Image: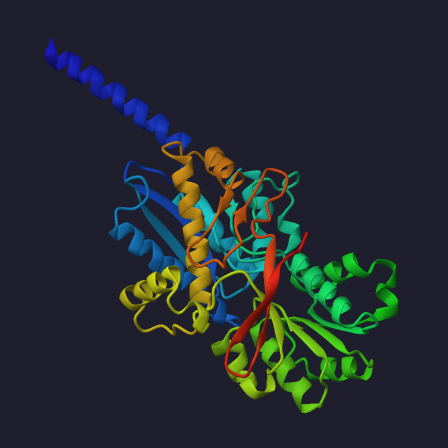
Amino acid sequence: MNHKILFCAAGLCALAGAAWAADMPGITATEIKIGQTMPYSGPVTAFSALGKGEVAYFNKLNDEGGVNGRKIKLTSLDDGYVPPKTVEDTRRMVEQDGVAFIFSSIGTACNSAIMKYLNDRKIPQLFIGSGASKFNDPKTYPWTMPGVQATFRYEARIYTRYILKEKPDAKIAVLYQNDDYGKDYVLGIKDVLGADYDKRVTEASYEFTDPTVESQVVTLKGSGADALIVAATPKFAAQSIRKTYELGWKPMMFMSNVSIWLTSVIQPAGPEKAVGLLSSAYYKDPNDPSVADDPGILAWRGFMKKYMPDEDQNDSNFINSVGEAETIVAVLKAAGNDLSRENILKAATHIAGFVPSVMLPGIKVTTDPDNYTSVRAMQLMRFDGKRWVRFGDNLSGT
């Protein structure tokens, strides 16, 4: 009799376990399987530091016991920044590896290529490596969320407002990558200038496959503009800094904050050529003396020393990777033991002022079902020849 009862109980448990697994793909009693694509090869390998940092962070987290007793298994695949490869890798992770969701995959074009596929299957595409405003579209693509960053459009609004404050009659030049990433900066400038855009702005775009942007910089200088906004990936960002300097052109120059790192942009361009360059920040800079004793930075340095001892601690990408990872961990903790895709998305879209350890004071991660943009303010900063120096108050991009 007892054996029969035990057998029935075991059968009930097995059935319950099967149902539980079906309701929560990628989740077991001990593991959370998630996936991402990264440019470990190809033209923007500088961004691959984000993936390396996230893998290392989850190794640290798992050593400490994981999230609610479950360890995170992150599959991070190299797509070379090629959208068809992103599609292939993502389908593999979903259909073969059975991941619960996609997290922090890099690139506007790459994420665009998988957005419909993931939304059709109701698979969360969370905190992706892009600030393109198209990813903040809860009504059309409710399963897709932009990264833990302000949108490019917000960033461009902040730059344009500052230009008008400092130079009310400024003529503005904009150099941008001819895709959703670059075009977002154009939209942000238009948001501020409105009907005056065509009278005050000269545009030049480039294709990702172009060898250089030197001719575009020459053209923009010829417009007589006294302010320049550059929306470029690291290789072209460095070229634009160098060419502007060589031409003797000295506009008030802003650089997209995804292309401001010392190791991959400033040093290749030549630090002396970047003096006075402006950008914006929402994460702490490990090279900033004012945060040298900051608890978040000290913890980050300890993490880097133990889990990534051979990597460059001057590369702020590793700061960003911790901010992204801490945010998804906060989401998983908020979801508790209901790790269905629906509940994970609910937790991700109801973040009420979470502050990653590496985020600047006064800036918080906030989401709601009508606005997935998680960072809505930034602080301006200027390069002084050695490091970025923040100044002024936090500025809203809304």
